[in-house]
Image (cartoon, rainbow, N blue to C red; front, side, top):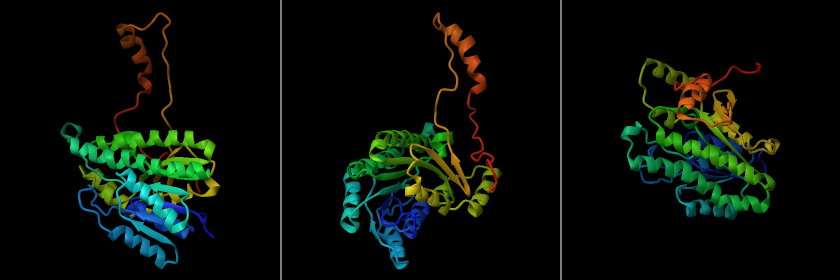
Length: 306
């Protein structure tokens, strides 16, 4: 018996990295899986290949599970509608979506091309819209459904050289929150996850100094793709039905709950603000609560040992 017995799950980007682990773990937990992967390179520039998605589907079947594969792109709404149709035709339903599909086109913003901006926004933000839009009416009609969408610390916290990626990933966080709010009355859950794992995506980020090289070596040993994948699958379980509208992180064996932007201080002036009083009063009064530009540690001290 698994926590996903009787459920059908679509996993995009399921041929490699975290997506692959999501598909395999979901199947081990009893789900029937539609494994989607375009089969392209990390930059999204190569023609699609049946290889990765087909390989994962065959691995699931060889282990006694049920799976089909799909090699279409999440950048096409019609293609994602086809993934829903494939799930219905193959398994008679769809109950959940995990959407880690993505590409990278990194570069400093002052050198960012329109092509690289559009490519990343199209796969991540437009792709997430497509995945959710193609399936939301099905979930509403059956009054049941769950999404795990993928955001990133590159958006939540920031990362030099990833303006396109960070912008897309923050957009996904906003999209996820509102889908959760709108879907609550129909028993539709939506959460997003900012994973840290040793995958071909993290391997592609340039190492700029010795400290970065040391972090990379540590990641290879302790931060694996199966860790955020396990958390993603857990969020689909019926036992997690009360969990929705949240931003989580997964880094090694650390599970992180992120805050969401809310007002932290308000400065008011009954007589009205002037340029001078804004500069001399409002901004100085808020300054001790400004966020620094430096990236802070991603993992707070655990509340309790386990």
